[in-house]
Every structure is written in structure tokens, then in C-alpha cells.
Image (cartoon, rainbow, N blue to C red; front, top):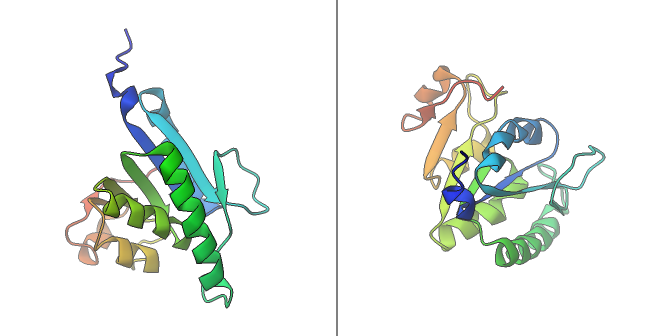
Length: 155
């Protein structure tokens, strides 16, 4: 018999499009026991998701304006969904939702991308300071993130 007690736990999965989102989708089985919603960037990469934010690019001159608009959209999504957990594999697009999680006392879980074997990502180095749980997929990253939990490959 399926236990639905945890259905009241709401999880926000958010990341940039592409490989980060593909990694996050590996956590889809959590939707069997929890209420989840998905957020990613609106890009040419066609994926089923609940919400799209504007695409950000590192060092792009328009990022400040895009981040402002994504923050407003994230606030609207937060008010509508009221998640208990925010789980992300990064990047810049996840920052407003991560900030909201910390602001409202909810749990922030960051999973460093599988592509990082020997050095941490910029998003990871920032999220490491704030995440309630920081997971690495390679043991070698424990030297960069000593308090991280080695979770093995998400694939």
C-alpha cells in the first residue's frame, strides 16, 4: 500500500536548461511520493516543465535585467506553489528561488553538476555557503567542498 503522508511536502526542482536540467530530471521518482514542480529556462531545448524563466548567460550584458525579471517571476511562482524544498543543479537561473528558500526558512539542496570532477562551478561555490545539503557526484570534489555529501552519480 502506498503511503501518501509525504504528499504534503512540496519540492521545487529548478535549474538551467540542457545538461543541468537533464540531471535534475533523474530525481523524477520523487514525484511518486511528493508534490513537485519543475522550473527551467525558456530555450530552444524542448522539455516538459511547469514554469519557464528567461534564459541567462554568463557575463552577458543583459543579465542584470534578466535576473530582475526572473526574480519577479520566481516570487510569483513561490507565492503560488509555496515549496518546502528547493533542489537545484544550478546555474544563475536558480539563484532567486534559492534566495527565497533561505528567506522563508525552507530547505535548499544543491547538487554539483556531474561535469565537475576536479573543480567546483561558480554556482556551486556560491550555493555551498547557503545550501542546507550540498551533494557532490565525484569524491574528488570533497577537497573543494569538505562539508559536502558524496552522493555518487545522479545517472
